[in-house]
Structure formats: C-alpha cells, structure tokens
Length: 341
Ligand code: FAD
Image (cartoon, rainbow, N blue to C red; front, side, top):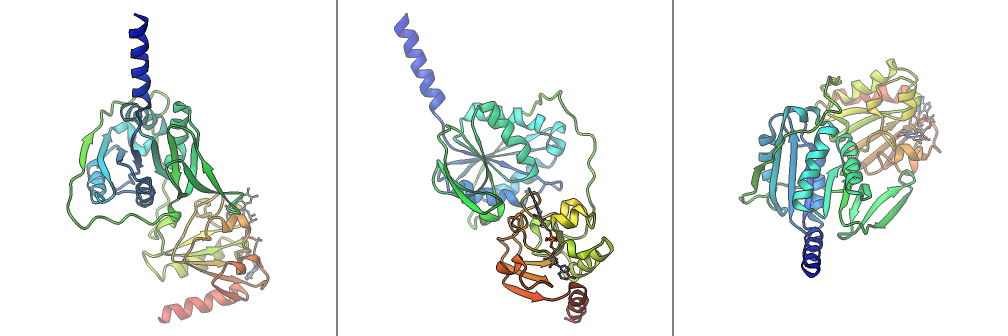
C-alpha cells in the first residue's frame, strides 16, 4: 500500500512540474481592437522560443480581437482562447484574475506575459500572489527563459535579474520591443472559447469617464508636443494644442509632472516615471528642464527636440536638436511657419 501511495505521489509531482509554454494576456480596447502594447508583448513572448497561447477577455467582440491576433501565426502562436462575459466589461481584475488562474491550472504555463498597462498592472500581481511567485514588472529585454532586464532608479540603472520561480509572470515595456508584424503567408491558429462563468461578488463595473479627443492616445502618437512648468497656465497650453492640431491623427500633447501638478493640463498627459512611457518618432520638450523622472518616460523617442531658455538645462544632454530661447517667442513663430508648409 505504501509503495502504491509513494508511486502515486511521485507521478503527481511529475505532473505538477510538467510546465510548458507561454501565455500572453492579450488586451482588448473598446472597439474590439488589440491594444498596441499586445503586439510588443508578442515579440517579447516569441523571444522565449516556446509555444505561445493567447487569451482575450472582454464583454463583446472578442472574436474580432481573436481574428486580429490570428494574423500573427508566424510567432509560434498555437491557440487563442476567448472569454466573453458581461462581467469582463472594463476588464475588472476581480473578474479576470480567477479565470486566468483556472487557465493556468489547466495548462501549467511557465511564462505569463502582458504589456505594461493599467489592465495588467492590476491583474498580474494578483495572479502572482495566488500562484505564490514573484511578478517581474516592465521588462525591457529577454535574455533567456529565466533572465530578464528591467530599469531601476527611474531608468538610471539597468537590472539584470534571474528568476528561479517555476512560473514567471512578466509585464513588458512596450517601447523596448518592436511591435510584432503580421505573417504574410496563411496559417491557422485555433480559437477556443473559454468557459467564462465568472466568480466575482467583490466588485462591479459602474461607469467610466473617458476624455474625448480627436488627437491620438499618447502611447500611439507619432509626434508629441510636451509642455513643462514654463508654460505657466492652462490657457498657454493652447499653444501646444494648436501645434498638435497641425498634424491631425499623428500628434498629441504631453506634459511634465510640474505642469500637471500646477493644473495646466489633465494628469493623463503626464509623461515620466509616474506617468506614461512613450517613444514617438518626434518628441518636442518645451519648457521642460529634463529631470531624471521625466526622462525615464521619453528617452526612447526616436528624435528629441528641446526648447528651453536655459542653455544648460539637462534636457539638452539627451536632445538631438536644441533651441535655446523663450518658448513664448518660438512657439508662435513655429506655428506660423508650419501652417505655411
Ligand atoms: P522645471 O524643472 O521647473 O523646469 C522648467 C524649465 O523651463 C526650466 O528648465 C526653465 O529653464 C525652462 N523655462 C522657463 N521659462 C521658459 C521660457 N519662457 N521659455 C523656455 N524655457 C523656459 N516629473 C515628470 O515630468 N514626470 C514624472 O513622471 C515624474 N515623476 C516623479 C516621481 C518622483 C518620485 C519624483 C520625486 C518626482 C517626479 N517628477 C516627475 C518630477 C521631476 O522631478 C521634476 O520636478 C519635473 O519633471 C519638473 O518639471 P518641469 O521640467 O516642467 O519644471
């Protein structure tokens, strides 16, 4: 009897150790589209060089999101799970986390990845706690299956870390990985419906206030006109909106924390360590000194332009182009010149 018991124990230990594969928590945005950061996450997932499953949670249009994901069949994606339920509206973490945990228990993934976003920041640490592993946030590089890079001290140092946890739960810094490109050839990725019965008596979605704007979201804008304390007032921020509106669909406005704290603009425009991380093709820092906490959020921009009246301002040390002068003279001139183009 005891030998039989030990055999069973050994088999169950082997089973529970039999981890395999990566799971990507794909993020759906309101219109049923994939959040752009999911494409960067797919690139990071493909660097782990093992099979990838994806899961999409939502209250509607999850099949449309899955169709979009199917185009990436060049990236080792084997299955796409869709879980649709009214309780996943607005992706409440209390609804999504138990469903994600069930999926993990069924498939024993070694790696679970999501893009760094408010969605994953709320869900993946909960999942990690329930699995009793250490979440690893905001990775900028995959070295191998156990080792990753991430920034620390507001981006002033790069940490190489090795995780011995059997399950790695990772969020991916979108700007550090290229967006995955859809496959050119054809191929099939299986889409499976997940049992999406939801156990959530802790919270319910009530309402959401969204800032309506014709301008693109900060992380997806190609050009960002970013203003600092030197703008001096909410009214003066209009100078930046006027500039951004000369590039419809491409440009938007960002800000330093000092500008946000002073009430010159809404706080969802804040860029930096405690704001958004952006990497547009063109970042124009206007009246921003270049504190490390601000630089942490924009230093990966392709071209950086600084406008500042202090020629020694630290922002010039990372700028590709610098204009030393008074922004209140430079901006109206720039706007006029661009209007003529
Ligand atoms: P200032 O540092 O006051 O710079 C204003 C600049 O405007 C100066 O360089 C000045 O020469 C120039 N200027 C003035 N008048 C003119 C003019 N007429 N024309 C042209 N130039 C002019 N900051 C962030 O931005 N994002 C963050 O996420 C963030 N997180 C933080 C987290 C922590 C924990 C801490 C401690 C701080 C954080 N900060 C953050 C704040 C950060 O340290 C700076 O205080 C802030 O970035 C300064 O904003 P600023 O450059 O607009 O203002």
